[in-house]
Length: 385
Image: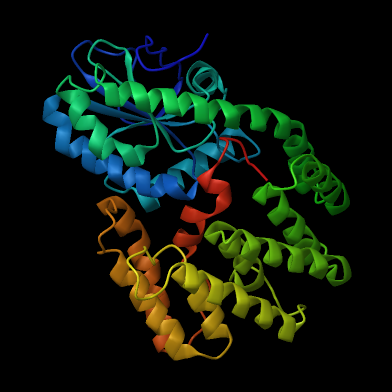
């Protein structure tokens, strides 16, 4: 049975509540946001801050926010619960809404699978009569939620068009995820066992099936260069990724390639230095041509990674200039939710201060990297390649 706008909301079947009182059922007259998230999901942190603001803003209008953690990456429910508690204490000390923990996968089966909701964070808005009014990314809630609360959203042409587009888009993604699932299962089982040869076999199978899948391509590079340290096989794969990223003129692909070459989480000491910097120069120049400093495009997404290249290559002033532009773009013409700004700002400021002091940044813009990584832009709710 499919779940879409106008459907009766499924029940909340959760045994463990980490924050707030248990919610047995939806109450008539109230509006609920049911948010699926996980600690490993970069965008979920910004979404959580946004939900705190929305709960406070609309509590008197009858809004109740419910966070559902149903996708934790842990060896046991006990470990998952500990991770969740630590994450909430660090990221959301002022949390003002319920958090449910479901290690059984029951909520995913009731809510996400029948609605083709292949990514997280995912928001379901339940109307005052306990029907689904909206399904989608929480970034849309600032616009949609006031209309749901005043009763004008569900019957509007805008809502119907949005849900039709969502079903078409997510249906295609769900079919792709179905093809990828056996490969992902094999890959992550091998990663858990640290069997890099088996993991590589799974990824090569995935690339043969979907040669244009950026997640498979990144995993291929990462395994060869950063896990297996096989420069002979890895560098040709890295060169091809750079060429393809530039040929596509895709910021996502170029940022992904740049991350493999200069990401602070990786040890690059075994890389051929001259070639690494030559590839970094090409990628950085193409990113800046695609999103020039004098243009209006948002800089907070790509400029921290480009700044890291320039700093590592010895051009400290250029790195500082790019980080300043990234910070300035947070206040630019593109509307950026306050919660997202609050999430990104600390790391950008830390990176800028470190570069001014002449220090390498151990975790340069980790939130930016996680928030905008290809994996989390299209996360499937299970660990994806």
